[in-house]
Length: 207
Image (tube, rainbow, N blue to C red; front, side):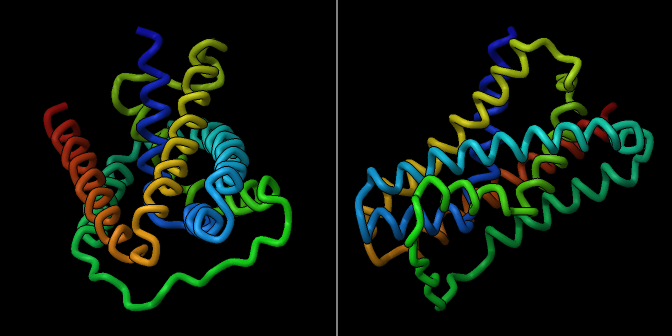
């Protein structure tokens, strides 16, 4: 069913947005300092930036896709990276350093967009994500129908917006206990990455 591309976009976006980054911290700080409405403005703009980065990553992915498929060692390295990073996040101890507070003096829309677009790790994540997606009997490229592309990128936007919205909601509950929620999020993200890595390893071994 074509609707599956919407859920793939949402899932991939949520996984990429879960780790505590600049946009997440900005949403938390703005929720605590101002209100959830102002934080939502950051989330809206950050979601647009996420779509732009994922769109560009799709272009890069199609350039290197043949090289990726024809070189088994790259797939093995990615599997190992997923497992190692997942294990690192799961076993990472709670940091005693408090997240630095950012002074949001500009428009929250501009802040959200800049924090979202100036994020190289996210671009790398999407290049890897597209490599995994296209390696699992689901083809996604610029040659895909407009409906498929729209559903996927709309899912990316929803996933980013939903994740940042949850950060805003949770920040109202945890107040000054951001480090504790970070530990939980890291563990959940770590488990998901390890599971994805193991599934890729099984698929590579079986097929």
